Length: 168
Figure: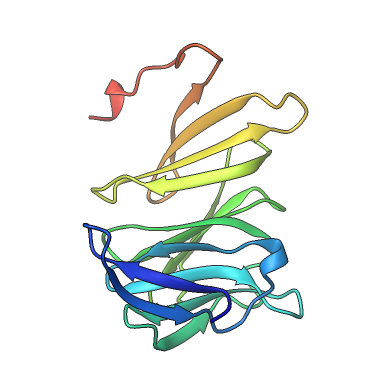
């Protein structure tokens, strides 16, 4: 079996192993687990960005985002079924429902690269981390799930410069 995904239990036991349906692995692939699906962000052989949605047993369920998703770098899903991707070309977060509807997008406050993102377990917040273009400084931004900017955390080599306690 070539490139693929594995679904494991919390203890690490293999449940399912399945090939990824399509993609160009030279560009890398990102995946996340939605409410009940495996969501894989990648690039097709024709350099089209798309999200493939799989059942946990490996059956392909649907695809979405073609024509909207252009240069996404990272993917995450919240506990309410929203799928979010950060775009490295236009510095925004695209928000989709798990069925592929595109209800929202919002701009990130820093133009950067090497993006990472995650959703807070409650689904209320989105955390986007990157390196600033030009300076290479690492930063973390926290937004509401609707895209309202809440907090900038500038990182230096020794400590976090802004407290997280304000989000409780």
